[in-house]
Length: 336
View 1: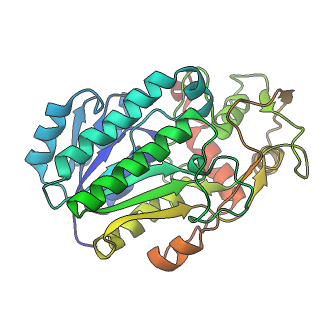
View 2: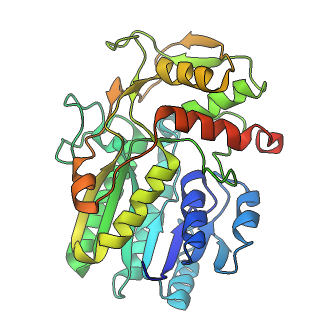
């Protein structure tokens, strides 16, 4: 792939930062934007070691003029939009914050590219499917959200569809299932603060001795072991899905949707047990009530991405656990 100018929003977050790092290694010019809402300035320092990285500290939901200046200065081939508030549980308690931040950030970016030759790739989520009764989930499944976070993602997809149609844009929404793990270089990993929402960071806190146990939200689901089942995908496989989308986007007019998952369902207990068997570290568990907004089962049919993007996940659950632990076991400063 020829070198491209890529604007990456959320460039110091877990997924955006990992993409930016890999894009820089591949020789692309990355224009990173973040306001460190869900991330650490340490990631920006690591990425700034590359001379093909430019960074802007900016809240894209509030600084439309700055976005205009960045886009018009760098003439990006594509914007990959990772930025956004992302916790399902928090979104139920802070709905106005989630709607304002997530919708306005996307609107501001789309407004800037509507009259230029810039493509758009959006970091969407399997939460747009809600509590789907059809498993595995295809892109044709009904979109019916069960959380405010999922609703903001679906609304952003609808906004992108309208802009793609009206302004003849090429846009792709990648619907992530559950990314875990860390880049195998060990440079970037999921950095979290006081109270992480995702399962793997909470496992890692217990493994590091920072928490005494992990809470499982519900063990009374109609699954094999009673805990929720998800489609966990290695962060590096997820990132390769973005490069596959970048490779194909010019041949895909309008707005296309792709699931990024493995097609394998894994329960919460299975992930914890696999972490223990892979690392040798036992994780104490406490069962709590179900968490509002969570669904029982959610796993992907990645067939469309396999066929159209010529992409598939390669890494297994043990790889995810090993890489997540190896990346952070000697990094106590990242666990605050």
